[in-house]
Length: 380
Image 1 (cartoon, rainbow, N blue to C red):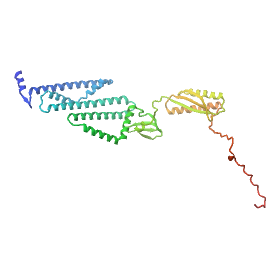
Image 2 (cartoon, rainbow, N blue to C red; image 1 turned 120 degrees about the horizontal axis):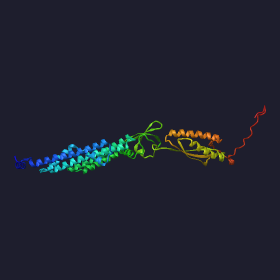
Image 3 (cartoon, one colour; image 1 turned 90 degrees about the horizontal axis):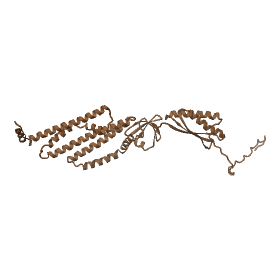
Image 4 (cartoon, rainbow, N blue to C red; image 1 turned 135 degrees about the vertical axis):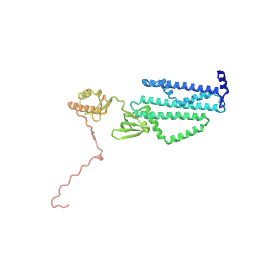
């Protein structure tokens, strides 16, 4: 059979109402499309694996390659078949159905790409921010991933239903009403959920931080979806709602590098000016002798109610509370010895009441003299 005869046969022979030539062209187009898409996917996968093996920092281009490497092989086959079908002169409603299948394939693939992109971005966030608090970051990353994927696939589903002719207006309205009802029913839970996300993103504290909130002081043990658990100084575990926790002022001691200390003491008013000046110098020498302290100031601050009031300020170069207490004890003992050497006592709080005069009604009456013993033999 020569070329002319083969060409004539291809145009004359029909299958399912279509010529063999058009079917052959459609098949070749489908095969070429499949091969090209497969090669592109393989190239993207190779680039992603090479970058992962080199441990390079992921940029936008690298993330795009990794997203494209997640292309579904089944959808590639479907796309190739649809390209071939587009080369045919299909009867009846088949062209519209092919268009719907195209939309379905593209929507599903976009959903898969979006899911992969979400996973990569959330994983990148978790690795970048999870060095100090992996439990907290893992929980927030899971919540963000779940929320983004739910929103993505809900959008894809609604788009597919709208494309096939389903009226989604009433469906979306019913979803909105149902969502409002559910939100009202679980309002407190959703509040704690969003508070947990806010804690994960804003990081007012992390697991292991020592915080003071309200009347609770302790170390953060766990940050959950609804509650945060704190190991209090007194030994018990305090469970607080995330929403209530964020409504209060939180003192976080994690970033404390040094501690500023202010304390006062008093000496009696009988202290001479020379001794009062020597006390300030003695306090300065005591604090400067400590390697873990930095002297700031020591002044005769005021004339108090019960004596001369001194104010002393110094910096503890270690954030540990026990270090501060040990240092304060040493300073107090040294201060006692210094005052003993100066023969100056501490002022003792006391109150003296001076009565200038009393009203006549309050003056004590002089009691009458006691009656003497009655003579023997005398009767009253």
